[in-house]
Length: 488
Ligand code: HEC
Ligand code: HEC
Ligand code: HEC
Ligand code: HEC
Ligand code: HEC
Image 1 (cartoon, rainbow, N blue to C red):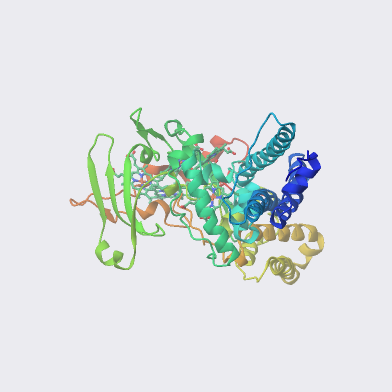
Image 2: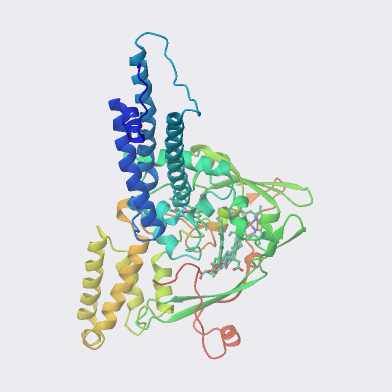
């Protein structure tokens, strides 16, 4: 190196890519960089809506891009080491008075800034993407399909998955992403359990999630509910239950606590089987500091086979299905009849719909044809006139029944009726009666009460035309049914 040749920018770039490793790195970085920019622009413009593309754009490509960039200096270092050949390795000296050096510095600086812009855009959009319902609910399609489907028909269908499952703050974010990595591995290796087990272990306490939107002190007083169930007779006769649910409110600060949400203002701890279905010991620390312990009668024998867990009761111990609401066939069909999604003048349609829903089908396609064919066959056999006159209504009913089946049954994930119990109430699952069963008692024999009026006032139970409904809805019932039974 006697004659100092002033390199052009191009020469400088080619020189720094002389080593094959650097060259390969540059090719990878250039290709993935160009692809990244294109995909990000398409994504920002909203032109592509494919969850897998998101995973490629924000997870796979950035890793390749950064790998490519890292290879360039790595190659340079090796080249320098080879030049030095045993002598002490020298680092290049940068002299900004030298126009050549200045040019290199400029090129290096500009390229670095371009790379930083790409990487930070990817990081920003990537975090946003990983928080999206699309990523959580659709990327691993089979695995999350049941939860995503049930969620889509729930009162929380506009709330992002991460608002309940992660909440705000970096610590839970990092925890969630670490456990996410384990889940990705489980999906890749097909080792995840079907169905996904519930309850979710280590779900963030509700204080950091639900209470970001719901204010415990402000849980409205009493709530009137009208539940309509249809009989299994030819006329599908509706019966009404009218109850005033004492929802109540409770906040530790104000000292105000009444009704069902009394639980929020008092500390209730319980020891239960891992699935939280069998509850043994319950202890309450009342707001005035008093403590009481209730033990399940004979729990020593019963608890022997269970591995137990103790928990501070919070929102999800009752609201364990605020959004992944799976229905039971009876309630789903009742809701469809209330909504007129099924023609209630079709004889025995309530009974037949429940029977068909409880049938076993191997797949969605199997259920679709099975339900449609059997319903037609039933009317063909029993009411041929109805079929000729109202064939369309029969087919529409079959479509509604199929839709109910499709949003509740997922053969790939082994999810069927009742796989995921719902703890609100006590009709289809033990729910409140896991504790309020008169079987949990203090040492002096006081129990957790099952007194019906503590939780609701029953104004009518399964009556065809309760007088109270006439008072509430003069001129006809507007059938209100359980949460989450909205029709598609
Ligand atoms: C309104 C709050 C909320 C939202 C929004 C929400 N979840 Fe959940 N999720 C829960 C609760 C509560 C549980 C049950 C926790 C328990 O019982 O331990 C749960 C449970 C789950 C489970 C375990 C299986 C089960 O059903 O118990 C999966 C998987 C899941 N959610 C995925 C999702 C996905 C995917 C989304 C977005 C499409 C989502 N969640 C949105 C609150 C929510
Ligand atoms: C991001 C805000 C947000 C979060 C977080 C959230 N919710 Fe909600 N929740 C809502 C909104 C909004 C509604 C009202 C929806 C409507 O009326 O259609 C609602 C409605 C409800 C209802 C009434 C449903 C009905 O039948 O009308 C319950 C119960 C509920 N949420 C419980 C929970 C629980 C339990 C959690 C935590 C696991 C939670 N929410 C987390 C926003 C949220
Ligand atoms: C002891 C069980 C229990 C606990 C704990 C509990 N709830 Fe409830 N909650 C209920 C019941 C029961 C209802 C009435 C449900 C119904 O009638 O559909 C209700 C109703 C609600 C409603 C609807 C109110 C309305 O008037 O429509 C919201 C919102 C709600 N709860 C949020 C929460 C949140 C947030 C928490 C935690 C801070 C919580 N709940 C804790 C049992 C509970
Ligand atoms: C983990 C056990 C447990 C579960 C589950 C549970 N409770 Fe309770 N509940 C208690 C205990 C303990 C008390 C206090 C009993 C006492 O003071 O005598 C209580 C008290 C109450 C009270 C009386 C509050 C007052 O005004 O004094 C109501 C109402 C109530 N629960 C409703 C419900 C409803 C509704 C559900 C189901 C959605 C439910 N509970 C689920 C343990 C439980
Ligand atoms: C610990 C609280 C609690 C006690 C005690 C209790 N219930 Fe309930 N009950 C509930 C809740 C919560 C619901 C569900 C409300 C809802 O779905 O919105 C409910 C719902 C009902 C329904 C309507 C079911 C439906 O879907 O049609 C009937 C009927 C009923 N209860 C009867 C009784 C009777 C009878 C008793 C006394 C033996 C009783 N309950 C004791 C909490 C309680």
